[in-house]
Length: 102
Image (cartoon, rainbow, N blue to C red; front, side):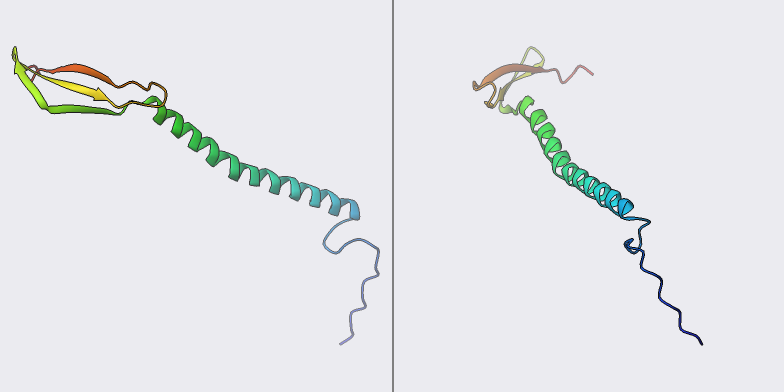
């Protein structure tokens, strides 16, 4: 068996068509890697901010049914909303539940 003669060195990097192609590939791979890194950092941040914003807008309501009264064929109770950062005062509302109305 005859040994294979080595290929003549042409100055191009192995696996690439030319030095220019290697430079373009390296630049493209770097840009794509940077974009994917940003996506991994930005999407969770935006998701957390969106969830926090919806939680901030909702009220934390606690019905006080242990003080409920039956009057005029309905159950009346006080419903309190706990203070939030946006509206720092506590609100209370009188609620009516009609157990006999379908």
